[in-house]
Image 1 (tube, rainbow, N blue to C red):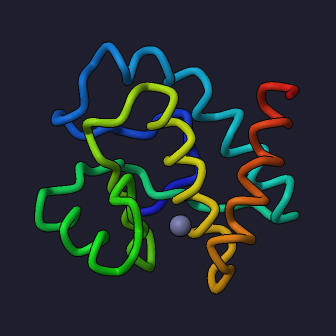
Image 2 (cartoon, rainbow, N blue to C red; image 1 turned 90 degrees about the vertical axis):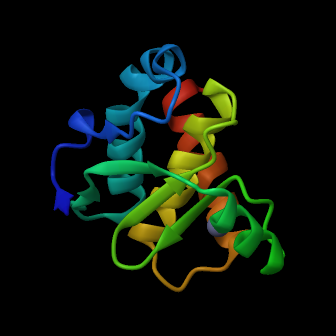
Length: 122
Ligand SMILES: [Zn+2]
């Protein structure tokens, strides 16, 4: 399910609520930065799901770190063991995959650096 209101993004109950509360306020600004880079409005996935240990194994088999995954067209899963800051970075990374289909990991990482400077000014 996709929606236009990223501020209402729902984190699955497997995520530590304290971590979720720490990053909630940055979710909407990150979505806005991604839309600015894309130059168009984007319907973001409404939920963030938890990676299972099977997902993690699969991701590692694909050469990824197993921190998060994006399944077209619109499923985002993050590793619940990540810190609050890593969750935010990974959410932005997976949303960028959603906004820029077909982009390489290197391109997505470069865009994520831009998103972080736009939101946090660094
Ligand atoms: Zn990626």
